[in-house]
Amino acid sequence: IKNSENPRIHAPPPPREREREMMKRLVPTFNRILVKRVIQPAKTESGILLPEKASSLNSGKVIAVGPGSRDKDGKLIPVSVKEGDTVLLPEYGGTQVKLGDNEYHLFRDEDVLGTLHED
Image (cartoon, rainbow, N blue to C red; front, side, top):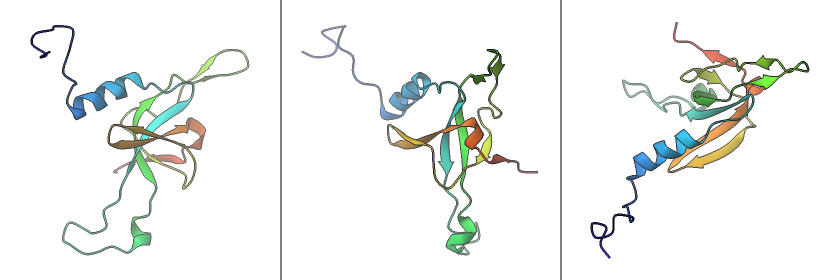
C-alpha cells in the first residue's frame, strides 16, 4: 500500500525534524537542565594547533530547563540558568541522553559550576 492510497499511513519525518520533535517532548523535571556540551576547537581560525589542555574547558549550552525545586514550605525555587546560556560543567557527572544523532546531558542546577559570558 502506498502512502498516498491510505491517509492513515504517514511517511516518517526527516531526521532533523524528528530530533526537534523529541526535544519538544523532553522537558527536564524539577531543578534539572538539559545541556549540549560544546566541543572546543583543536585549532585557531588561522590554523594554529592548540594543545589538548588549552581546549579542555568543560562547557555546554543550555537547551531546556525544568521549573525548579520546592523548599520545605512548598515555595518554588527557580532554576538559576535559562535556555541559551553557556555554562561551566563539572568534569564528571550528569546523565547522558541521546536524541537522534546528538548527545545531551542532564544536570541538576546545583551541579553547574557557573555561567560563561563573552564580555
